[in-house]
Image (cartoon, rainbow, N blue to C red; front, top):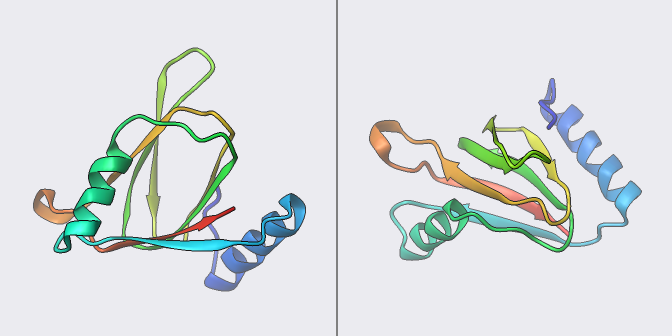
Length: 114
């Protein structure tokens, strides 16, 4: 988890990670609560799941909570907000819950790097 001190700092950190890991693709995920595709993404992300590869997320707008299982099988909650960068190791079980006002998910934009 990394909370940058500025937009430039965050972009530099992301670029350093991309160079180190050889990531060459960038996907933008938008979780818009007023869009059916966005609501489906919220439902999918909120279920516990894992990925074979490392997952790198940058929170472009909005915020929420990543719940990640540690080695003792205990949930660890990390609150993320605009500009934050989080790297999840391969095969780490996790879920994501967007944080919104009054229970509504914000228009959350994340960059997914592979």
